[in-house]
Amino acid sequence: METILRTEQLCKYYGTGDNQVQAVRDAEIAIQKGEFAAIVGKSGSGKSTLLHLLGGLDSPTSGTVWMKGKDIFSLKEEELAVFRRRKIGFIFQAFNLVSSINVWENIVLPIGLDGREADESFVRDIIRTLGIEDKIHNLPHTLSGGQQQRVAIARAIASKPDVILADEPTGNLDSKTSDEVIGLLKMSAQKYGQTLVMITHDQDIAQIADRILVIEDGKVVEQR
Amino acid sequence: MKKYLFPIMIGAVLLVFTDWYFITRVNHSYQEKFQILSVMIEEQEKGTDSLAVAAGLLKGAEDFQGEAGKDKLKTYGYLEEQENWFGLERKQTIRNIILASVLVFLLYLLSLKWISGQWKNQKRRELGILSHIFDQFSSHVYETNFIEHMDERETELERIMAQLTGLGEQLRYNEELLWKEKEETRSLVTDISHQLKTPVAGLKTCFEILNQENLSQQEEKEFLEQCTKQLAGLEALVGALVNISRMETGMIQICREPADILDTLAAAVNRVYLKAEEKQISIEFEETKDLRAAVIPHDRKWLCEAFINILENAVKYSPGGTEIHIRMFRLTTFLRIEFEDQGIGIPKEIYHKIFQRFYRGEAEEVRQKEGSGVGLYLTREILEWHGGSVTVSSKYGREQQGSTFVVQIPYAE
Image (cartoon, rainbow over all chains, first blue to last red; front, side, top):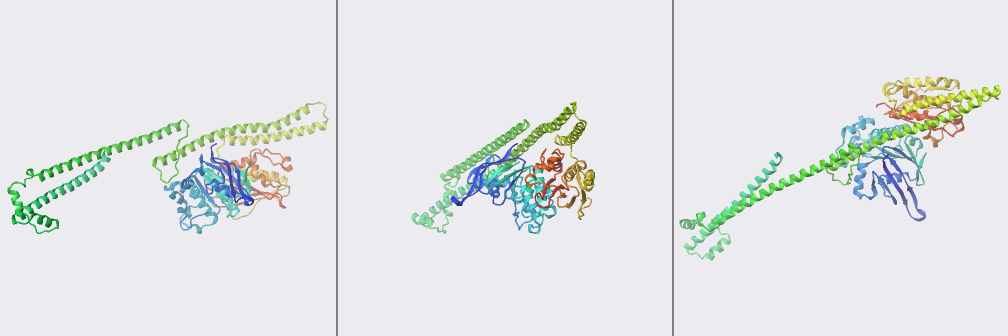
């Protein structure tokens, strides 16, 4: 299988000397195309830092991240921004929707930022799959947490990225809604052939993934 | 040729316009020269100093007439264009202007032709690249060698190449998926033969011992019982393996048709009812407002199988006299069904393992029971085929025990 996302001796340290915090230590990860991988760790284990490094949102102390055969930190600042926009979809715990525009506009916003035309029938299909058809003209704040996260999922999928990175996507949701949102994420990633990497502290949620990686004190190991 | 008509017309009109402008300028200057000459002649006759006339003209005095002077020039025939130097010069200049403009126009046409040629070549080259890629695709080579530049400006070709690269990846992915399926079938065959080895060996040993003649009646009976037990285990295993191999090798097509899921669930409960009754375990449908007919596209036979596997485990790993609760909730996209038992529970570390093929728990309680490690694996497969999921949570290790299996099935296909 093709490896779509790979890290080589990835390290991220904060501070120096005795105060040094090793958030990520020598992470060696390989994610295959089409896979759903969960990275599980307690809070403070370095899991969010790891996801930020994978998505090029933060630069590592040392080591490399390869996505689609490209060393993403060899790209210039503007190039990396374009790369992120085209190749990666992000889903955050806090949804990060733009409050002044409606649901449909939120979903197609990243495509518009890239100067492309939204594939309307594709976006409509996603919206139908996620069950937010009757909400597309609403403003985000009129929706429940679960609905807002659906919108964020739709936004991440709509620009047809190769990889979707989700950071505690169910952190703000009750357990039934969490199960549903994760089920939806899996179903849609499967349907649209996207690779999904999810960060969570919750083993219950992680078991739905094809593969579980555990991060502890910055070290990443495979759970078998 | 039609598409060049417009730029050619524009060029011609522009040229005619500039020509006309320059020729009027030349004519105007020719007339001015004669005006000056006429004035000088006229003023000379009046006896004015020629320096004073020149100074007057330079200062912009406008009271000079020059009509008489012009008449004089006319009488000498100097106004005839052919007969004076200025006229000849004017003619020469106009000819030059026209010549130059014709040259410019020709150059314009030539460059137009050159640019269109370049453009055509470029298109041909681009189409050549594309057709080369298509050729490669048809011979199963999905490399486009396209290096995407991550900048804001993107040409049409780059966009198409990016799409083609994506398509190539998709095709390769599909091919690899097929290959992986083949590999899985191969590993399945290995796994199955491995699974069959142990009970067959056990059975063989039993028969060998039975064949010895120095066994007491009691011993003989014991070994016969042992044989029967091994055989029953083997039978169960074979049944499970048949299911799993059908599933894995794609011999079964999950056939989703709209049907009432409650019927399917009830059928599954009926299948485990006897076993539950033996252990005095009661299976309760919990009354919730969501417990009513729900028509969902699903494969009745296989989803029933998935439910049976969950319920069978619940009965198998629960002590007598306990309860199994089934709850149903209608969520936005999925129907959620919970199966809660009061059994031995499952440690958190193995939540994901119990759904793996041929995995069996390490605990003593699990080892004692008959099982092939296939049931939950099959359940997960069946649900994934439906676009749904199955997960477990357990109160293992706390005062209360028991596991809850959560099944999610999407309403729509």
